[in-house]
Length: 237
Image (tube, rainbow, N blue to C red; front, side):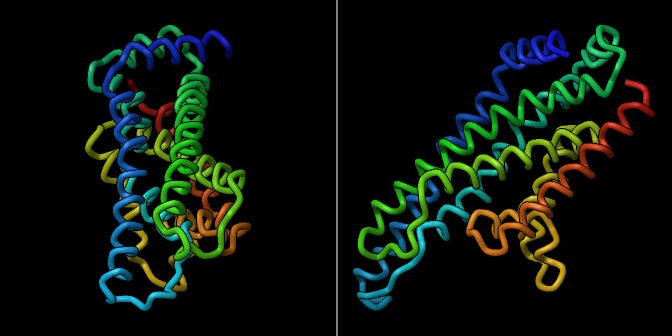
């Protein structure tokens, strides 16, 4: 398994587009968080909201991370869909005929990178929001909790995207499907919404029903990954 992990890491390092997406995510999330927090403070300064109005910093982080998931999705999917686009997936599967190992290696590499990046970006964005809000911040959360929540969300999202990419194979299809699952489903209301990954991700970040939310995210990621693995085993490259 170690040689397969090394091979996937080497292939990822040889591509520029996934890293561009990762840098874009690292910039998009804090910029969005800053904009939302600054608008909130501006409304208070302009008298549109009462002077004593407060709001949890996690509210702004949650919206920013959901928005930034588009870039994390793109980073993850390119490790799989780019090989289908160029036909190099055939060489990969010839070098390692055990296809489950290929998908596992890709998933481990990209989810680990995405999780670490998501954790750091999430904490940086949270601290930035807390600084902008100042006395208008409410319900402060520990740095460790923010790191864990952000990293776990992005890591599980990456595993889900790996499954979708192996199932769908095309970049456009994977991006549309994954974004719909992880973000678009926020539009679905109760009672179904909390059992879908979009709302579960928002709940996980905010700490509302964290146990249920984590279970939902893990279940969806597992189902998507297994579906992708099954398709990879059953279909020609």
